[in-house]
Image 1 (cartoon, rainbow, N blue to C red):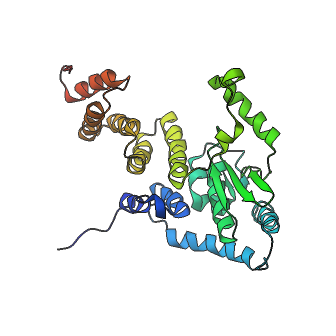
Image 2: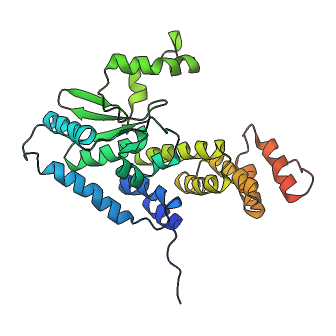
Image 3: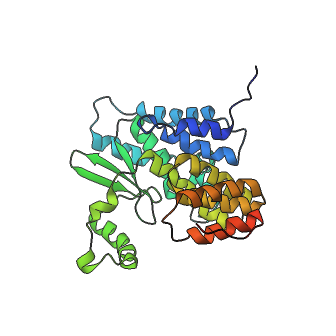
Amino acid sequence: MQYGCPTALDYFATLVADDAAFPLTEAALSLAQDEFPDLDIQGVLAEIDALAERLKRRLPADSAPLHRLRMLNRYFFGELGFAGNVNDYYDPYNSCLNIVLQSRRGIPISLAVLYIELAHQVGLPAQGVSFPGHFLVKLRMPGGEVVIDPFSGLSLSREELEERLLPYKRQQGLTGEYDVPLGLFLQSASAREVIARMLRNLKEIHRTHEDWPRLVAVMQRLVILLPEALDELRDRGLAYAELGRREEAIADLADYVHKARQASDRLAIAERLESLRGGTPRWH
């Protein structure tokens, strides 16, 4: 018996199956397969390894963490020239690591993934931070924690972080007696959370442009990545409906209505489901 080759989604599902062995850089790079189906992922990973190796050769084995960090920043932001894509921030290619690697331009989270990979390869414990509105990187150093903006390459002081956070706190009503400490917003993001944020960035771009084929591709990955997130299941069903893939839309929305018993939009989604089925809503 012959079996077909694994699809890009099969490959992605394998990468994200286990939190204990979640290859962040490879999973992030695999997202680009929706735009570049023939992408040589192992070849691109080898390019990243080669960049890291070049830096490693310059670092003595006993070099102090702070020296490694300074060399990494000089190399990544200075010599290699990685920086934020200020001219076309919402270009979906900013989330394709293969393109970011070529152009040296990206958004905070894609730049962060590459920076974290290089940091790990030179022995620095870098981690992503899902800071509101702008992804950051933090490193625990002997003298304390360093927070870096991968978009600009700047190290951010506590005061600068508080200043960046203030508009979000005001919007969310987290000021005065409801204030929450800065540290709450500087917690490490897991690899799964990083990939989810990358996909949700793409989701918002494609939904804004009503690019339903690309939106469906992103939603398929989100449902694989976050199988318990019923809102992603619902949104995939709605995207299928926009694309005219009626049976798939019905399957997703029926699953959502069945599972999301307490959801505020359950009745509205049930109505949409029945309209897709061509019937009258049945209330339960």
